[in-house]
Image 1 (cartoon, rainbow, N blue to C red):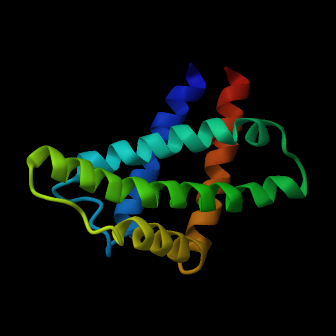
Image 2: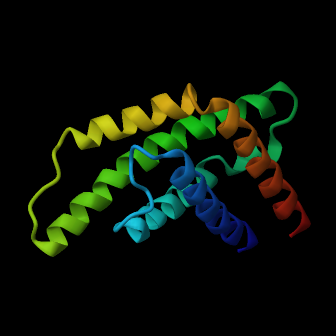
Amino acid sequence: MKYNLALIVSGIGWFLIAAVLGMSVPIIGEMWLQHLISAVITSLVIGFIFRKPVMTWRGWRRYILPLLTLLSATTLFGFLVPLSWQVTSMLQGRGNVDGQAFSQVPFLLVFYSMTVYILILYPLALLTQNLLRKYSRDA
């Protein structure tokens, strides 16, 4: 249960990081709540998929893991953001989101997170994994 709570807090933290770094995609705007939910879902999914590696990987593999989780998380978050736009648009009866958003947004998020922002995001991902490991071990 504590691991789940840590993942939710992590999702909120990564949402704030995305809001600061992601000026081209308005993360904090009129749809901030949908984006926050997308970030928390991303954190939970990635946290469950990579739980065993986060807890057990040591040595050089421990330093590869942030790259794997960043790639996976930005891809998933990049897909969930336009999905949240689509769901909101359908609920409000405003039409559909352009289908290209489902390929372009994930591509752009992955591209920028793995190139331009890697020097910021890699240490944050490593810190997140260390905190998850410590928090779960203490629990």
